[in-house]
Amino acid sequence: MPLEIEPRETAERLRSADPPVLVDIREDWELETGRIADSEHVPMSDLGTRLDRYRQQPVVLYCAHGNRSLRLARALSEAGFEDVLSMAGGITAWAEEGLPVDVPGELDDAQRVRYSRHVLIPEIGVAGQQQLLNANVLVVGAGGLGSPAALYLGAAGVGRLGIVDDDLVDESNLQRQVLHSIAALGEPKVESAERRVRELNPDVEVVSYRDRLTSENVDRILDEGWEVIVDGADNFPTRYLLNDASVWHGIPVVHGSIFRFEGQATVFKAKEGPCYRCLFPQPPPPELAPSCAEGGVLGVLPGVIGSIQGAEALKLVLGIGEPLIGRLLLYDALAATFDEVAVRRDPNCPVCGDSPTVTEYVDYVEFCAGTH
Ligand SMILES: [Zn+2]
View 1 (cartoon, rainbow, N blue to C red):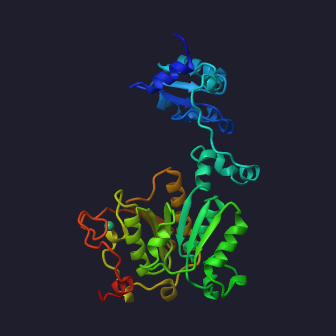
View 2 (tube, rainbow, N blue to C red):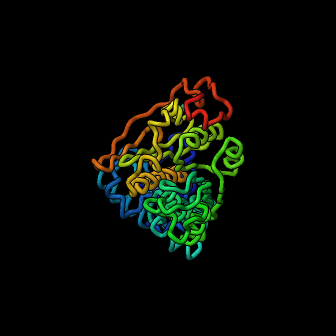
View 3 (tube, protein in one colour):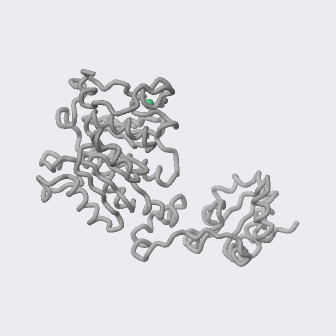
């Protein structure tokens, strides 16, 4: 049985009703020259652990010139794989036939070095890094949660990073808000944050909003192209306002909150899971919901939760992994445990439910003061 298939025939079979799996077996560093769309990339060095997936289905392997893929196809065929072929001449012959090749966007020399540890990950690679460089993420709050989130998103090369905060840096912030330093005491947090992120990564355009989110400014801010929001707000009115606005704007929110030794994180994405109001239709009475300023917080706790928020934001941008949609992750620093609770969309939710009753902004301060 012949073990090779020509590029044109491969292309035809890929368009058929029962297409084979096309597997790119080249190493990571070879992908810069381009890939064939819809191929799976499994470098030959990783193939051993993932082979069984391909035992039951027709597979076409390709490499640069068709030599390695032919040797591998022969070995697999001898090992009992029934329908494994090698694409003759590899991607070089494919391109010479005029068949389409996806060439990833270019990274410059400095970016190649800076992001090398991302590029090495198959799920990210050059194409994923380009996605990050083109991404727009808004961080609400430059405090305990916003600090690690903004630092890691900036370091990761998120190309446009918005930061909303109306507060000034205070001495009592430095115990946990690692964006800020002694030199920034008394300065607006957005200015301190912007300077720190710029020092960290010149690829990032920081958009500062020295504002508290309000019903008056939230539409204008959310209309500025943000695809993911990290909620690092420290108060309930902002949290409810941001929830309603993000549902109406269709922007997913990576939520985090902290108290003393306990923190939680989840992702609110309308239609795919619950929103904040599905979980908490009513704000807690103010006396039962002390802020960090009133109740205290372990300094490192926002570092843990804000970093989880950063990871979720990167996953949403890249479209990889299992986001925390419909899952509330609970962290207890004293017990050193992580727990997970399934959370569901409430069809009767006043904002994201089937017949919403709240369709415009309310007075959130009043709503949270319990006088509504
Ligand atoms: Zn809801």
